[in-house]
Length: 208
Image 1 (tube, rainbow, N blue to C red):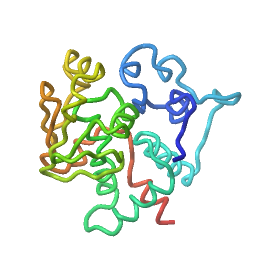
Image 2: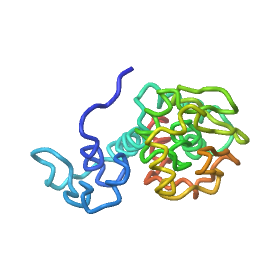
Image 3: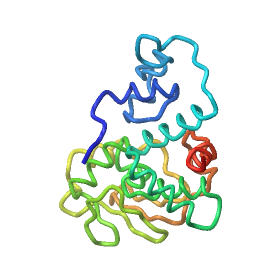
């Protein structure tokens, strides 16, 4: 499967905002956006003026980079959100948030979405007692997400328990760090999704 393999800090600089792609580093002064708050490249410090289309494109790129997905899959999420009843932009974000890799990250069982994706890929998690190793698996309200019994003693989970989890558990999830398991209580509301996105611009882009 294709994926981005270059320095992720360049992505944050390109969007001129923290996308929290590198875990703990993003919360320190070592963050590249703090040190160099302009896009990478020879002309990064030049003044940039985006057209309406350019603004819409940047929001879409930002969303893809935050959740670590590529164009084809992102387009499928948009089509599904557009098919459902409700506000398309909000439903799109709900679908992205309900991915198992994002839920693992939000529960505090990984320091970044990239780390969560790798842990899921390696088969360390189960949903409702069944192993899930597909990061794009969509969870539903009532689902129980837990680290598999044989994986609980791995150093990565020991360190997370000792550190007290990630950077705050969201209200739509319920976590038990000691048992390294959690539950999806409900779908998140827009005000509970703390990503720097203007999703209406993404909807406008795909509606052109």
